[in-house]
Length: 468
Image 1 (cartoon, one colour):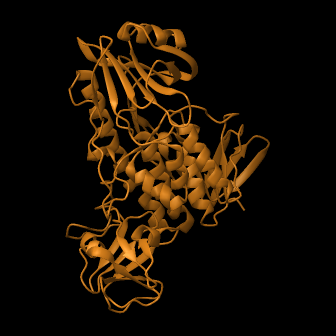
Image 2 (cartoon, rainbow, N blue to C red):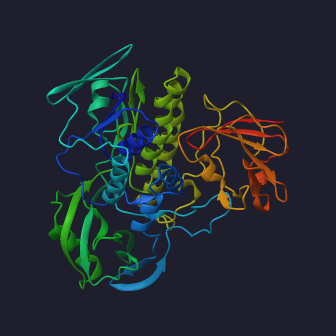
Image 3 (cartoon, helix red, strand yellow):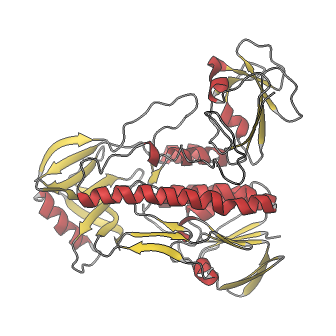
């Protein structure tokens, strides 16, 4: 039985489909395009997304296919004048195993997610647009080519031009700035070192240059080139002419895999839900590419929504919009502020801080987070920590959280409810169901004293903290 129908098979829809399928929820995912997209688009995966991908069972494949951030060579007037990193690389810590972003073209990320989804017996249905739908108190009737489908819920993950959002009549509030236009796409470039990204500009106007970043696993670079207000074709010749003007020649471009002329379209849906129909990803919010936030925010929309759809309780379903719309508004503000720095030519426009890694996103003050005090509170991201199990095998706390279930952690040697995971101080005698806190990192991260109980949501956020 199909219980959830997902319209749109980008990273958001695929993440949601995997999360539902692993819970045993009947899911179909339809895509109006006849073929899968081939190109980079959103190629930056933030640290929090890597944590989500670990839980979904795709992280190893993503890490194998992608690459860490590379330094950017700065070319001014045809001369290399220096190098810079967009963000300082950080070392992993006990509570943050993946502190840095990872680069992988969006089409390759989607391919990995599709492969994972297929392991649950679910495949993307290409060439299958959602034609219409109607909902009532008990479910949604969806119209697909040649069939009518009855489901419990419909999720529109169908992009910025979302059919689902438009059919619901939900306003897409925001602006489209016609004064800024960029040529984006993927291209091969002879004469560029693939160990670096490359930024070509003129000395008198360093912020208006072309950026080319190597894409892992393919011979292409992703490029972004600002355009003037004149109408131009999104073509190889246009890009080559712009690059020659900035570099003085010497780099030959060929094999343009895809390209588009982009304008800042910064919008947020007025609502993320109408009854049994939900919006996620670009259908609910569209971002400028500055800061690498759009794909990542959509993945986390899906991760937030999956366990709530599977549960089906009113409390959980009602929590989706207030939790995720607030996050989307915050992230849009960050992306827009970075875009403004580019517009103004700020020296730090290329720099990325902690607020782009999405590790600080949480749901304090939300409908599932009771008011609390302390450094760590309900609604916060659950920290990781190194542990040892009862037979001396090293294990990470994140491994205890992996899977579709809620997890109850009990700190110390007091009584533990059935199914709880008990964490004891280093040097304690362990039973088969206990774990030793190596180095005291778990107790420190959770501000734990003996008897503390911490309930962690299936999406890795704290739901309740109870003293012993």
